[in-house]
Image 1 (cartoon, helix red, strand yellow):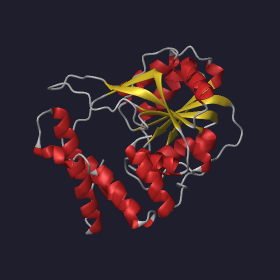
Image 2 (cartoon, rainbow, N blue to C red):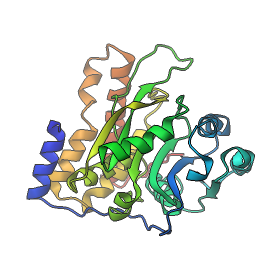
Image 3 (cartoon, rainbow, N blue to C red):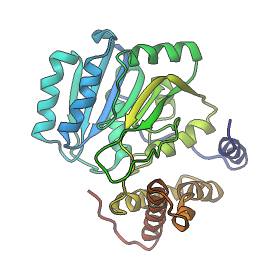
Length: 302
């Protein structure tokens, strides 16, 4: 248990806050061992890679499902790719969102509400899984550890970019590749729908405060593209949505979370590597988003 976890648990005892998010769980019958939930918009050429990874798993097809949730009303290509992979995956369902565009918290909750698996594996469209026994090992890790959530080991996948760097903490509970027991997600009511991004980080706050436990798996591995900040739009949108959480948390807790979100800001003073520059820029954009929200300035993010 690290220092931040200890501080959060101590703060929660002194300043308790609601542990429930916004999700409404639709299904009671659990038909599968695993629900793989992928939220995306467009980028079908990228999405198909993770779908191929799932189609190549040695886990029995009848024991897992894939749920595709496309933002902004969906696209013809998104619906088409789900049809293409139905013969390969057997249990794949496609949904398009007609409201609350750009709110990742809402999008994750929507996918969760459709899940019929005992375990829920959240994936990004650009997550890469190379292990054919990933799902098999995931079920075993839950069984052996008794944990409420399993964190696979993440590594940066390198693209044709100027400079290469690994920004991943090896074990970070992010929805680019993260698995939970469905009953825990149901009890905590998933994510806060109004969050534009970092909905997974906010959920982890409530997850830890509730006394739930993670298990860090060295048997499960995934790749994800490195963080590239070409502009601060996303970071500002995340900061703006975070500012709206002020009504959910006591001030001292909210300030702790604010400090956590901006912890990389000092790295801008020492931009000796691309990793430090990107992390510092994200924290700066995050703080700007919080400030803009407080003064009522609207932030456009697509």
